[in-house]
Length: 272
Image 1 (spheres, helix red, strand yellow):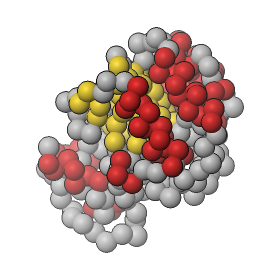
Image 2 (cartoon, helix red, strand yellow):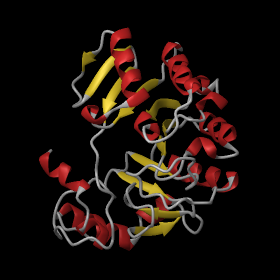
Image 3 (cartoon, helix red, strand yellow):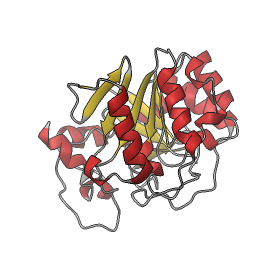
């Protein structure tokens, strides 16, 4: 059962993070195509993530996209580097926004303007039902302004350990999460195994900026493509012989696509 769908409304980003595989994209999905994709996702699940590659807040129709997600009663998780959030002071007023994840580690290798942290502080002080997650990478490797800001947060709030690994509660609906670094799967990598567990295709899908539907949010080049949203609805794609055959193989712990056989990220699911 598909629980969530990742929608890449753009592959454009304003940062150049060393841990990201983004080759500096240049495409914005049209608002018409985004609405079509949302309508199709709605037939499958109410949970949508505006995230694969790219910075979603760069999209010129970002406010209109949020408005449409409000209208369609979608539950949105937004992942952003946070550098443009100051342009959207009312973002937490959108009822669709279930969770806002700010990847502060994305700016660790960039020039950090003072108002960046001021914008984050304003979000933390805003009374909203939206969950806010501040993401960092390995705490021991933090330095500079980012390390100082993390220490300031720890001093300001009585942080509590949560049941989620590497997650700490700052206040109601507000958390710090230390993300684990991972390697993006690459089609040129050696094969790890042709068997194993993965959540791709079974609980998640991703729609890329060109409309391609892939089974994994770590597949921005569409190597694991199972259709295109411009040609068929998600429901039709999930009823196709290709998808049904794929699910049979996944249920037998067989990895259907070459990229899956070369992925190391999925190995964490074997521990569950």
